[in-house]
Amino acid sequence: PSFLHDIEAILALKRERNAVILAHNYQTPEIFHCVADIVGDSLALARRAMSTEADVIVLAGVHFMAETAKLLNPQKTVLIPDLAAGCSLADSITVEDVRLMRQRIPNVPIVTYVNTSAAVKAESDICCTSGNARAVVESLGVPRVIMLPDEYLAKNVAAETDVEILAWKGHCEVHERFAAADVRELRQAHPGLVVLAHPECPPEVVAEADFSGSTAAMSDYVERQKPPRVVLLTECSMSDNVAVKHPEVEFIRPCNLCPHMKRITLANIRAALEENRHVVTIEPEIAQRARLAVERMLAV
Ligand code: 13P
Ligand code: SF4
Image (cartoon, rainbow, N blue to C red; front, top):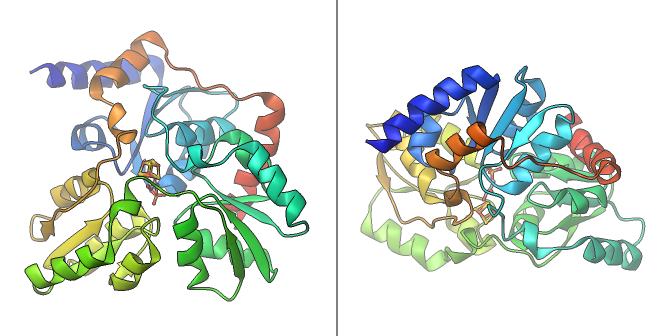
């Protein structure tokens, strides 16, 4: 089958070009398990991007992840197999929005979720991911912060900390579709079900869940607790990838697809390595300021 040819070609191209493939937990199993060198949540991908010796990084994920890898590796070639792999959160806020917010609410630090463009990161004081949002907010030692652009992540973090959090109105198009009633119905239909929810889900959903955390934290939860029956309220490939390692766990699978993550395929990863496309570039002046915000996050 053609996907086996693609896998063989990708493995050979990685050696030829001294390339690594970083894949997000939402990538399909053939990418996640067969060609990726490093897999993880956004935080792990950012950290691991920093320590690679490769000349070329292929980011199997969405555009903001490729930009973050480039920010941390200005000398390396960073490729994204499809430039249209965006993110509804990154699209929900512009540089002008952030500047206006700073003007209207001066002297309050701005924390931006990594799910934003480099230009938006450049306007902020520090970045965060779903894996470290609370720690980042609390590291600032102030009573009030602005957290952009995910309204639900901001509210979910606010529920766990004494720091006052001012939110924006961005939503993840995948996670906003889960509802608290779905969780109740699932529990009725599947006795003993353990419910894990990503913090981009609405707060009512997180309140009904047994655990909330980043994609890596959800994966670790299954690894540690080995619940007999579990549902991961997140993107569909997440359960597929975790289930491969845990045949003893029953995965209940209502899930939502991220159309942006699904733009990445074995065929376009192969083309990316063969044709050196699409090279991620960031204007140096923006990159310098955005890098600072990411580095401050990584220091927390
Ligand atoms: P994680 O950082 O938890 O992997 O989340 C990234 C993402 O895009 C979630 O929708
Ligand atoms: Fe963006 Fe949501 Fe897709 Fe993650 S799942 S990349 S937050 S649209």
